[in-house]
Image (cartoon, rainbow, N blue to C red; front, side, top):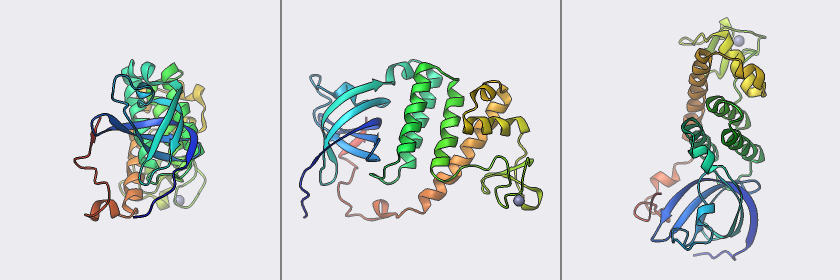
Length: 263
Ligand SMILES: [Zn+2]
C-alpha cells in the first residue's frame, strides 16, 4: 500500500452534492475553481456543534482548506463566500433549475481534478442568476446547458449546417448531427423546429437576454426539449467512452455500497 504525504491546499468551490459517511461525517463533492471536481470528507459535520456543517450544503460557494488524502481529501476549514441555497430552495422553478445545473456540472466532470475554470464560472453565474431572479429560471438553465455543452466541445450548430458547414439558416435540426442541418446532410428523423425557437437558443448561447426574454412560451418549451435531447445524447455517448473500471472490478477500493448512502 502506498502512502502519499499529506499536503495542504486552498481553493474556492461550489458544493455540488453531499453524501453521508458513517455516523457523523459527510463526503462533499465540490467543483473548485483551480482543482476541478474534488470529493472530500468533512468530519463531524452532521453533529449539531459542527463548525462548518451548514456551510457545506449544495448551492454553497465556499472557501476551503483541504488536506490531500490517499483516496479522498479531508476538509480542514470551510468559510462561506456566499450561499445561494436559501433563495434558490425558496422558489420551486429556481430549485429545479439549480438542481439540474449542479447535476449537469457533476456529470460533465467525469474526471476528478481536471480544472475547468469556464465551467466553474458558468455554474457560479447560473446560481447567482437563479438566486437573484435575474431572468426566468428555465431560461437560465437552458443558457447554462448550452454554454456548458460548448465548454465540453459540444456547441450545437445553430446557424450553419452541423455536418458540412453550409451557411444557414436551415430548417432541420438533428440531435445526432449536433444542430441545424442543410437538406443534403439531413438525416431521416430530423426535427423541424420553429425558426423562433432556434433564434431563442442562439440568444441564450450568446447571452442576448433581451431577445431571449422576448421569446414566446411555446418557443421556450420547444427549445428546452432540444437542449435536453442534445445534452442527453452527448452525455450518454461521452460516458460510454469512459473506462468501465469502477463498475466491473469487484475488488475496487472503497466500495461505496454499505459505507455510503445518499444524504
Ligand atoms: Zn450540410
